[in-house]
Image (cartoon, rainbow, N blue to C red; front, top):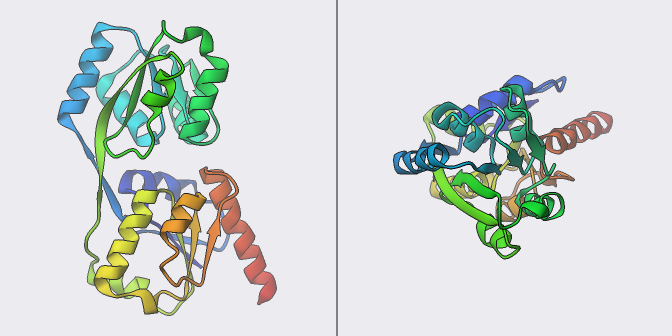
Length: 251
């Protein structure tokens, strides 16, 4: 069965490489694009060069940009919302990496529980996208943390489909489509409405990383919408595996 990865190209390539589920043929159709912000990168470079910060991440892409463009020391403390960004940094040689194993709110809770002794003294720098849907700075600031943020990139929605992508999405064969973010889900709904595709997607099964993402897709008449138990890639792929196993039993 084909499985469609809707992430940005860089993240989707990593996901495609990590696929090890038998019987799946991954295909990338990105519904979002990530664009670096020159001013934000310059601002972050200035901050890191002139002061010591512990870094906060809620996306692997922010960690990727930080490493390649900001060059913080490998001993810089890094706090990540999920395991993927943490593993990415650890793999590059960063020695002081921590994971909240879940999402942005879990990262806030992790900081309050494990790093409360640093509140008000250690400076935290949240490196993120321009359009993040959460306010880590305010949440941690209310708890006494000295925290600021810099947007390193922005997310833009894809607003077109190539003839090949359009034909593929509306083909009658059963497919799975993965949604990792609210941005990708919103972009997909916009595309569906623009091309009037609602009646042609009944063979697609959507698998989403959270209830929030799933709710965005409720207006689309998929064959089914499945929600991962936890908001991480491992749980998402486990949900796919369970679906495939059930599908095989039913057939």
